[in-house]
Length: 163
Figure 1: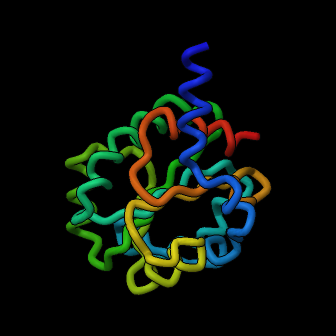
Figure 2: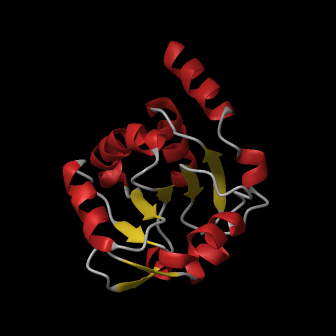
């Protein structure tokens, strides 16, 4: 019962109501770049439940959140959840080094110069970080949050993505 209450409380901080107004189309239309500077069509992730986390190396709350995302990827990969890190930077080598230092086990894609516009198109008008968008298999944004997510919030996000 305590776990259920904690999950419900955590879920309250996710913006589910506003998420319905957020369209995933700008994200799925985007071409981002992997850590080898190769283009990646985000549309390749369509049809999968996604936890899409926007971040940057200089963002302190992002650094706190990354180990939780790494853990989530380990625990829920078998259920089909895909964690995708979307970095707002342009230069792949330092981001690649950072990802290695933090043991990031999920794809990291760079926005280069498209980051701010993409954040804004996904409901983050101030383009603050970290920002997480939760997308179900139908490609619908089912939740979003500006600010670092804790383990309980990520569990709620995972369940929302899997519905």
